[in-house]
Length: 45
Image 1 (cartoon, rainbow, N blue to C red):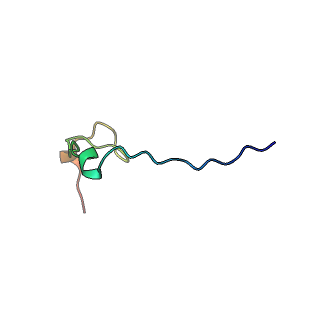
Image 2 (spheres, one colour):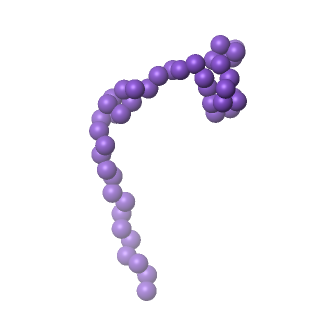
């Protein structure tokens, strides 16, 4: 017997502004750079 599909529920945690209020640029980067690369070592073209 197949299970009945249940649509996922969206839980509101707060406003976008409140959720991102503590965001900061910081001095370290990640993603395509090694995790300890200081931002001063990067060049942007």
